[in-house]
Length: 139
Image (tube, rainbow, N blue to C red; front, side, top):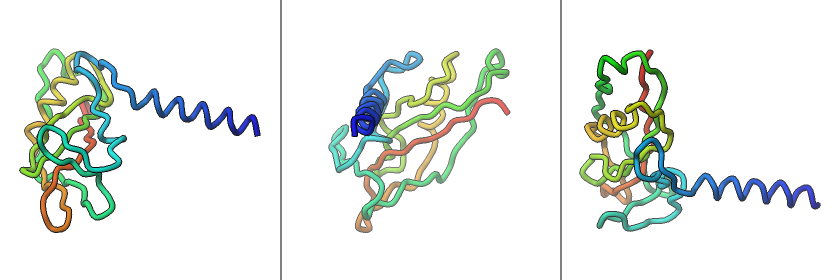
């Protein structure tokens, strides 16, 4: 019984720590919405709905590859960007969830802000919803 309690306490602590904001590679804070939005919440003047329970996920319509300067062309990795796809189909409030550093995080943010999405849908109407995106660098 004590062992089960200890394991649950450790898991709860890990979940709480992972939900805290932090400064990652020069980008102020994380955008924890990808993992933590459990109900509708007003963000930036717009209601944001979690995906599921009658809310479809936003989907990518048009994306571009990141433009990497020659001095960073040999760098490899995958940055995770979390953002909100607004009703207009564009990313708002983007932040880094997995940082790479070396200037690649800013390139990843600039890249996804150029992507166009089909917004999430709730009861037949477009709504804002969080999305987690991978931006890959290198081969």
